[in-house]
Amino acid sequence: MCKVILVQKEFLLCGLGVILALWQVLTMPCLVVTAGGQRLLIKEAVPGMALSLRFIHSVQKTPVEEFLVVSEARDELLLTATKYQSFGVGLPFSPAEGEFTQEGDYFYLRGQNRHFKKLDLRVGLGTELSLSIADKYLPVYEDYAPGTLVELKLVPLWKGLVIDE
Image (cartoon, rainbow, N blue to C red; front, side):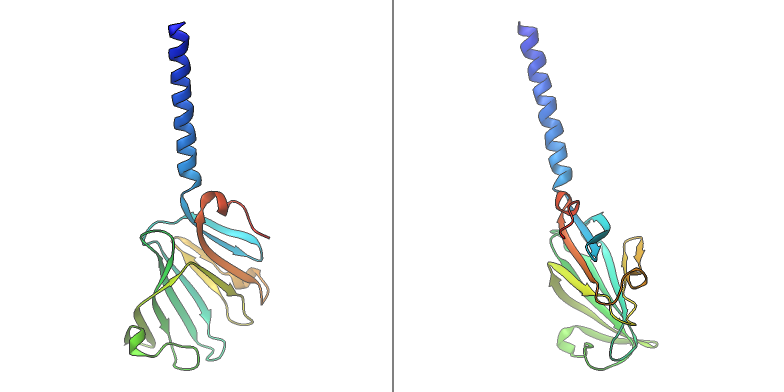
């Protein structure tokens, strides 16, 4: 009788350990990218993980790249810098927005420190929207029509596995 109770306790503790491990995996913060309701990427959100958005500016018709990182708490995306080729409507210019420098043909605005819980983007006509996330390149403009919603969000793994329609 005593041996049976001991085996049951060991089985129960093992089961609780498995449940706890599964819970830790399922609640792990992840970066999820969707386009048109289709999941393109799900990746563990590591603090400081770099990503960038590239596009052709719709008015200036010049390339723009925005650099972001995952926050330390893994609950926000932080815009840290913007790289672009021309001045004009919709492009940063104020020294209050960060440190402005010119390197060759490009202007950089660094130290922007803008916080985003999620990013909702749209594929634009001729804007060539693409994303670089860690080791993955996603040229969304090649596969999705203009107007398609592209979402970047930080969510627990379990939520990222379920696509909201």
